[in-house]
Image 1 (tube, rainbow, N blue to C red):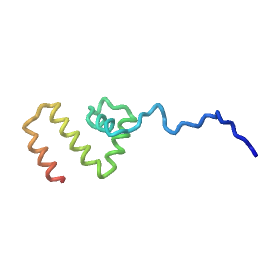
Image 2 (image 1 turned 90 degrees about the vertical axis):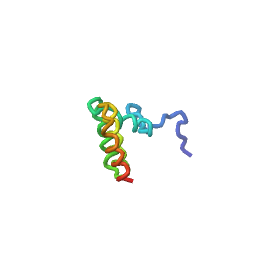
Image 3 (image 1 turned 120 degrees about the vertical axis):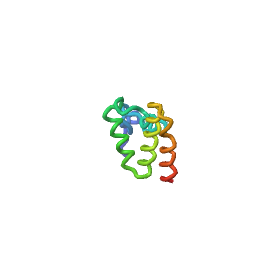
Image 4 (image 1 turned 60 degrees about the vertical axis):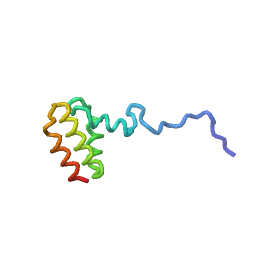
Length: 87
């Protein structure tokens, strides 16, 4: 009967350099200014947008944060109409 060392380290399953994409982190990335994203973060957003279920939510969230940042309250009704139309 062959015995294996019991103190052998197992390989890591996740890359410690890349944090997990949690809902909180995904929302944070989507709402950040595009010019502040690094390549990995941009790829994560591109991956989210490729999923039909998330594409509309990402687009609407980014449009909303743009309205807030640029202080365009007159555009809110147009943005809201887009949401009603999408649902």
